[in-house]
Length: 135
Image (cartoon, rainbow, N blue to C red; front, side):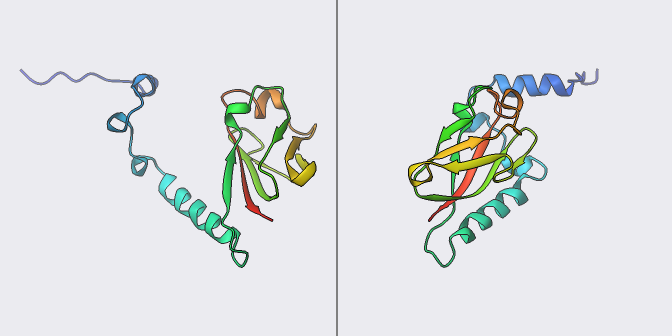
């Protein structure tokens, strides 16, 4: 008798992978995900070059854990120059003054404008990060 094959649909694969315990031996190596290695390499190159000439390397602040679908004002590290604000929901890259402003003592407040729909772009489960360098 031949070996029986079981067909597994994509949704089932995702559910099985997501149900695994989070530990290195059960995680998918990023090299197997199409397009990721090149993007990660490019991001590292960008971060290293942001502070060229100033001695300050680019850094990332992640707001993901603070997203709740209604909050539009966030505290960010002091005395920083925001390079890029990005998210996992459209718009994927937020535009300075159009989509967000940085204000407050030592530039510590990032506020998304009315152009950004908080219930979508800033909802729980989404991700938002800020690339910045020291001033």
